[in-house]
Image (cartoon, rainbow, N blue to C red; front, side, top):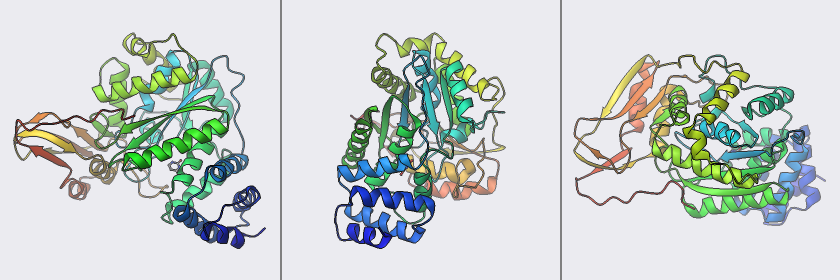
Length: 422
Ligand code: URA
């Protein structure tokens, strides 16, 4: 077997054989297939696609490139969630302890932010002392004692994907549905969860800008999970506007704690409960009431145990950025649009996100949102508060916000977009 014949097969719109797929993934992981050859193959896949058999085999080969975790020693069924990423998407933070409080074990392997979308690990690292890097044994221990764990994927899990994702990031090949689906699902299947709920985001702040692409990604991933024996379901959810009233690391932790304390913004509560119900159903837990577990403090109890078990202090003050700048409404009327992508880019430029994997993030940086689409606003009132430790970033962040919102005259009809689209 050689890389050039594999590339030619896909370049000429052919179907890759199982042997070609197994060989190319293994040889790439071992360094025998060069980055430039894998780049050419990834581009051929982006342009010409893969059928279901090819995607399934590609995913299996990526799983086989590393270790598989095993949670069969736990007495409770496992349930996990994956979001395709968005702006202000802090849902994992209240969701994992909530589902654990309802009786499932939640092994949540999460990532860091890159570009305009935030990362769950960056958010949690704003809690003093909290550790994202756990050994497999520590992960199992936290899961067993707290019921939920949120941590980084170890190096041994789907190493082929780690290498390939980094390559796709710099070769314009991230957006291929077969590659996104196999990348996400190889890690989730190798992680060993029994059931999985996918939150596939649609809109300006998401990978998938329109619902047809999102549906195709969702059904590809559900098919992959099912092929590998993981009960998998997907929700398509709105990402045209940020989730909740914050985008940024410590700001989002604070908002998540409000939700766990029984308050918080309605869209965050609604999506957390919708995903919790799907996760519990997928795990076969029928008699739990997640709304009650939020209201009676049992989800908060799991949060405190989980943060403490990972070295964090749940009572410590969260970092606050040194400087603030307010953006005010230029006119009176109804806010009809607040763009998720623009808010994400501005939060990133303020220091909440990173441009390269090795860049640090500012814990306190980000954006507070004072009005959401559908709400009345008055000229001069605060719409946004920008937070950063480095005020020289304000101008650059403000440039991203020049067409971030629309205000229509009072009385204009406004139809809200539901948070769960399908
Ligand atoms: N997240 C992943 O893990 N992989 C992708 O390809 C895209 C998003």
